[in-house]
Figure (tube, rainbow, N blue to C red):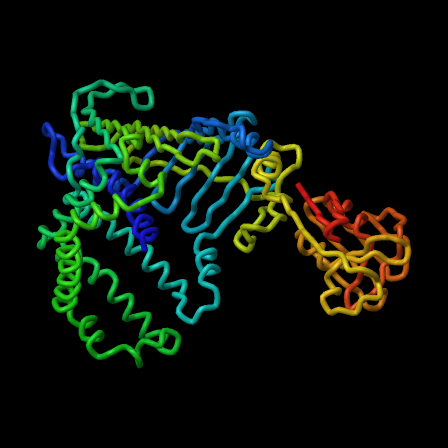
Length: 534
C-alpha cells in the first residue's frame, strides 16, 4: 500500500510542478495561465529548441565496464530541434539531431501526417514509418472491448477540442508557487529582439505536498468551474459513447447489460453532471479533511531514500517564460535537477535543460516532407524487443553502434543444461544440448536460432532446415545426416552431422552459435552451457 501511495504521489508531483508554474492569480499584471492557454490554441507556427540531459556521476567503482561505458555515452545528451514547422495540428515536421557525448551527432527528420509518423535517421537504409493509430489498435489486441478505429478518431478529435477547457479549469485552480517574479526584458526570438515580460519561477521538491493540497482545495471550492467542465465533457463524449453502443451492441455488451440507472445518467445531462460532481466533491473533501494527518504518517514511515530525496529541496525546477504583448509565450528556458540516492547506480543526480522559442504564430506555415519514393520500412508490426530492428540501419552508422554497442538491444544470454548423452530419453532432452559419440556438443537448431531472433524453416522433402538471421545477414542451410552446411551459398564442413531427436533437429552447438555471432562457454561443474551474443 505504501509503495502504491508513493507511486501515485511522485507521478502527481510532476504534474503539480507543471501546474504550479502557471499560478492561479496574475502576478504584477501578468496572467501566465492565460498565456499558456493561448499557446495551446496555436494552429500554426515555427519553432526551435533543445532538450539536454547531463548525468552527474557519483562513485562508479562498483559498476561493470558496460555500465561505465553507457554512462560515458549518456553523460551529456542533447536533443536539438533545429526547425519545427506546424502547418496545423495534423501536419508537423521536425529537423533535428541527437548528440551523444562520446559518439557524435545523429541527424534526423520527422514528419507527422495525421496519425502517420515518418522518420528519417542518419544511418537508416530507408525512412521508417509508424502508424500511431495502428499501434494503439495492436496494443488493444483482439479484445472484445477494443474501441473501433472510427471511435478512436472521434475521441482524439474531441480531446483536441476539449483541451482549452481542461487547461482553463486546471490552470485557474493551480496555486501560485512561492518563488514567482515578473520583470520586463528584451530578448531575441529567431534573430528578432522583442520587448517581453519574463516570468521566473522556482519550485523545490519539499513544496510539492503543500502545492498539491492547495490545488485540490481550489478545485473543491470551484463548483461552477467543475460543473462547467463536466458539462463540456458530457456534450463531447456521451454522444460518441451512445453511437458506439448502438453500432456495436454485441461487441460492447453494454446495451443489454448496462443498468437502467446508468442509462438514465447518460440520457440526462443535468443528472450525470450532478452525480459526477458530487462523487468528486465527496472524495476531495474526505482527502483534504485527513490530508495533514495522512501525509505526516506517510512521509514519516517511508523508508525509500529516493522518494525522500525527490520530495526534498534537492529537487529543483527553475523556469523562465517570456511573454509578448499579445500574451503569447515566445520563449522558454527551464532546468530540472533530480537527485539520485542509489549509490550502486554510480550517478548522484540528473540535470535536464530545456529551451524553446516560437515565431510565425498562426501564420501560413508549410511542414517539410520526407522523400519516400525509394521505399520505406513499416515499423507498425515490429515488436519492441525484436532484434531485427537493427537490420534497418547500416552497421557502420553511429545510430547502429549506439543501439547495439551501447544500449545492447541485441544482447542475449542463453543458459542451457547439458544432457548426459545422446541416448537419454527424457522429454526435456528435446531442448537440451548433449555430447554425441563424436564428442561434439549438439543443440536443437530451431530452439537456439529462434531465441536469438532468427527465422527457421523446415523442408520435409529435402530434409533441410534453413536459418535466416537478419542481424548477421546470414542464411544457413543444414541437411540431416550431412556434414556439409551452406552459409550464404558457401559450403562449410561440420564437426558432426545434424540428426533428428525427439522431433527436433540437433546440430553442432559451436557451429550454429558462432555463425549467429555468439560466444560459447561450458561449465563442467554444473554441466551447463552459456551462449552469449553482444
